Structure formats: C-alpha cells, structure tokens
Length: 454
Image (cartoon, rainbow, N blue to C red; front, top):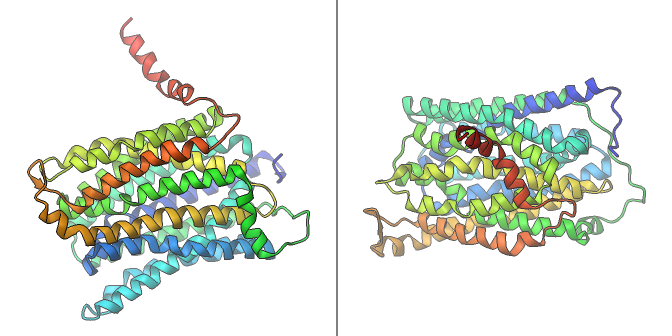
C-alpha cells in the first residue's frame, strides 16, 4: 500500500503536474548540455579523445557521492533539502563553465582544462546527491498502480522540449559562430535547469518511511542491497547495458561533426530531434505496456533491437551520411523503453527501509562501472589505435576506416552479451511474454492493414 495519504485527488494531481512541467524545463537543460553546443565547446578547447572520454565519465565518477547522499537522507531525514541544494548547484555550475573562455586566456590551455574538470565534477556531484533524493521522493509520491502510465505521460510531454531545443540550438549555432554563441546556449540551458528545480518547491513531499529497527552501521547499509537477488540481477544487467552503450554514445556527436562533416542543425536533427520524435510517439505506449505486461518483456525487446544499431553507424560514411537515420529513428523509442522499464522494475524492487542506499548503490555501480568506465576506455582506445586504424588502409564506401567505427563494432558485441548473458537472469514473476508485448504494439498497424485490404 502506498505509504503517503493524500488529502484528496487534487493534491496528487497538482504535484504530478508540477513534476511533469519541471521535467520539461529539465529536458531543455539536458538537451543543451548533452548536444552540439557542449561537444563543440569541448572540442574547441581540446581535441583529444581520451580527454573527451574522461570528461564524459567524470560526472558519473562523481556518482560515488550517491552513498554520501543516501547516508545524509537516511541519517538526518533531509531528503527535500538534499534534493534542492544539490540540484541547484548542478544546474548553476554551468554558468561559470560557459564563461571559461572569457575568464581564462587561450594561452593557459591546461588551466582551462582544469576548470572544465572542476565544473563537470561539481555537476556530477550535484547530480549524484540529487538523484538519490529524486528517485526516493518520486517513488513515494507516485502510487505504484500508475507508475508506468505516469512515467510514459511525463516522458512524452517532455519529449516535445527534447525535439524543439536541439533544432533551435542547431539553427542558432549555424548562424553564430565562436565561443560567444556556445557560451550563450550553455548559460540559457543553466537557467532552464534552475527553473526545473524551482518548480519542485510546489511538489508535496511525502514523509520518509521511519525504520522499524535501530540504525545500523554504515558498512552494513552499503552492503545490504547486494543481499537482495532481484536487485543484484537487475543491477548486473543494467550495468552491462550502460557499458555497451558507453563505448559508442559519447562519440556519436564527434563522429557527425568531425568525420561526416555535418553542420550543427543536421547533427542535432539526427542525434536529438529524430530520436526525440520517436520517443514522444512511443512514451505513452511503453507506459501502458509496462503496466499491462511488466518491465522485462520491454527490456528484452529494446535490448535486442538496439544490438542492430551499430551496424548502420559503421556503414555511415561521408558518402552515405544519412544511413544513420535508420537507427536514429528507432533509438529514441528504444532508449526510452529501456530506461522506463529498468526504472519501473527497480522502483518495484526497492524496499521501504533504507531505500536511499539501494538507490545510491544502483546508480553508482551502473553508471560508474558501466557508462563511465566504458567512456574512458573508449577514449583511450581511440587515441591508442588511431595510428594503426589510419595505417590499415581499410575503406568503406570510399572513406578510410575511423577509430569511431571500431568503437561502434565493440558496442554491438557488448550489447549482444547483455542480451544473452545478463538479461535472462533478471526475474519478474508476474511479467508476461515478450511476444505478447510485441503483438500489442503491432496490433494498431495490423488493424490498419486489414482495413485497407477489406
């Protein structure tokens, strides 16, 4: 039973509307700091792939502070305060980040890099502290019987911002060049991110569940989640998925801008707008599927489909740059499905007592051992193997093989490992078969086809 009693349905709906609107502003923030403006900003300062991979991993490395967040939340019952302070820091740190070219001269390249590292570390620490509080708060706020549909509706509305934002940024950057335009985009993104957190001031905060037993030692709290088999298996699977995606995801924008020579708006359309459209179209469907069929069928479907994507990226060359449109059309729906399914299943597994430590451990292991390690390894591998790849003489459609295509091939192999090795170990007793889910998703298309042939 849900532990928080709302005085009326209006109170619940108002809080859910506020969290959804906040997510729209948050999507603008993340679309900007993860898109063309960020990539161009970093590559204008330093073009080393090993540094780029490290910077992609840095906020995830800072995820170790999730454990500190969990301890503060459980020890001092300060979930709302942790949420507000940490996320305000995370969003506002992008203002000094954007001003680095003006605060530090170009002759001090190492100092610029150090400042970038410092700002991204603060961003990561703020996100690590806040994420634990966010998931705990949201789990208590949203009734369990409507989580799937809520996550779907919330994701679908926010995807509108994810579609519009990259288009506006790409158009602006193509018309205005240099650090001035890049810094402007990042500062505006910071302000939108701050609006996101501000709206949570009007979201009802359910009380934290009081532990039935006396407080135990920190080491026991850290290790307790690993004694839960369902939690441990889901964690292993999600870590493997993020590791596979980490070999590829951070370098797709670099590949588009520097190898395929697409402009800003073309790159934004390919990597953010097109996936955003498909995510928007599928968010509500995925939410209903989770409520009706369970999370694991959706995990199976999205994992195996995602394993095919790297093939199209490998074959995308300057002669055929638009071949990537095939995986990009599907990737928004697939990634959203994976994220919603694993989050819904994780929320289902979480106990009421010491929940923050379960959330912290899940985030730290998955994103640190998964995505962060993969991004750093991929960056180092790209720098190390570049002379060998360039000297191999291998060409695809008239273009020389790049180190990024090698990373894409490794990502494909790792995705198959996730599907065949780790996913079968994830258990959800009440879940239905993946074939039932697929039939449900394809049912509207079959009805249209039959209607046209009658």
